[in-house]
Amino acid sequence: MAPSLLLMNPALSWTDTEATAALRVRRWRSPISAMIPNIHLPMRSLEVKNRTSVDDIKSLRLITAVKTPYLPDGRFDLEAYDSLIHMQIINGAEGVIVGGTTGEGHLMSWDEHIMLIGHTVNCFGTSIRVIGNTGSNSTGEAIHATEQGFAVGMHAALHINPYYGKTSLEGMVSHFEAVLSMGPTIIYNVPSRTGQDIPPSVIHTISQNPNMAGVKECMGNDRIKGYVDKGIVIWSGNDDECHDSRWAFGATGVISVASNLVPGLMHELMFQGKNPSLNSKLMPLIKWLFQEPNPIGLNTALAQLGVIRPVFRLPYVPLPRARRLEFVRIVESLGRENFIGEKAVEFLDDDDFILVGRY
Image (cartoon, rainbow, N blue to C red; front, side, top):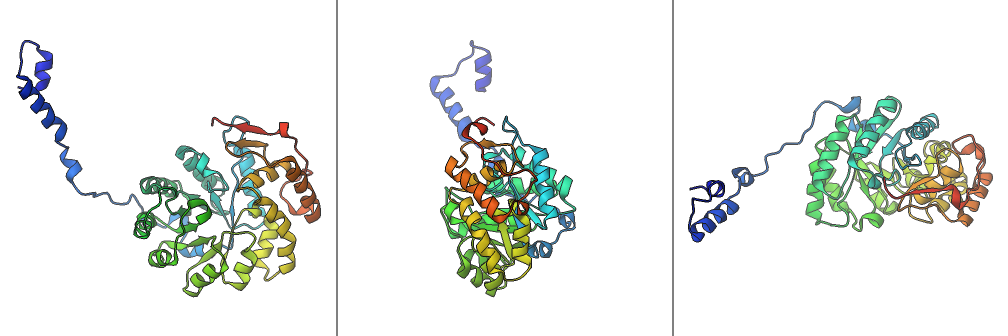
């Protein structure tokens, strides 16, 4: 007699041994589906995404890792965001990374993340290439987010190697292969954040995939040259090295943080040939941006330029007063006309900033 019937009718009884044995059997047996090997196929479409080919992505020279601005309650400020994207388009940026480290994708829910990718495509997808950061240290999450990102129209995906819970080199290859099947993909190597380098052996293996557009590489120009010599497309991930990466080591361009602030100057740096004078002129700004972990400096600067509200999602907080004063001097030295926005740069006091912990 089934144990469920015994529970319904206390008058019926088994021996303790029989009942215990029956429950053990029920707990032990697994659904037959659990014993079937994984048969999931990638949820992909073979149609070219937004008429964008891998070669289109490979040709981009200036890609901005765009900032995500916030309202005082911590929700997205889409009006300010739209203005930032407009200024990128007007000043010659060819692509944007949505929800990357600079855009604070790690502080977003996946719903927010995919919504912002979809919003960007919907509003600007015919004017600029939209590259969604759908990477994760969980392969399952990366697959799901990438499926969603391409479904809402992104032109390409950005993928990082599994961080914190690091894997083997074979695991890295398997992780990337699981997402490369879905569409044009840029691989992002930044060991200072992930704690693990993506070595050339992994890149060479996955570069055989037709959806591999290239690598955002933060390990210096010698690494970049080695890839370029093998025919792999590379974007510098370091604003302070990107001029030489482009003109001396063969990089296609840069995925830039500084271009959030001075997109016109960064466009000139990537398109107009060697210009060591301009490169040197930009160094004080670039060094200022990265004296604390990105995007702290950028968030502070954009607020001082008056193009976003001075709202930070924790754990980020603004740069200290002395650094904020220094930024005013940097803007005056480079020329306010070279920065985005129209308001005069201003010094913001501590009380001007809003720090949001629950969002």
